[in-house]
Length: 104
Image (cartoon, rainbow, N blue to C red; front, side, top):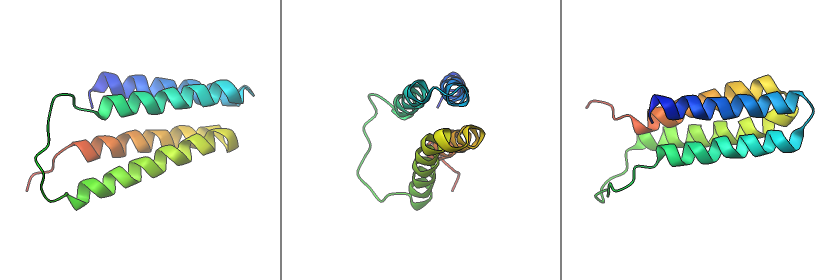
């Protein structure tokens, strides 16, 4: 993920939390959804075909953590907005870690 994509996703998450704190749950959900869509597009690598092979268990774990954090962040926006922002940040970091290859 490029740094600009991470910043854009974080800004959308902040807008979501801001609207949730102002008592506008519809706009909070819209911006949370946009953050998730932007994150999904930022994590895609167009034009790169993967060769079939064994799945990396560490990468799979980071993907699971990222998905769990982002789902919990959307739910937390309505319950406790600052927690939603923290969870969204952790989700973005986890998604970044899933993309970075670790040396063998």
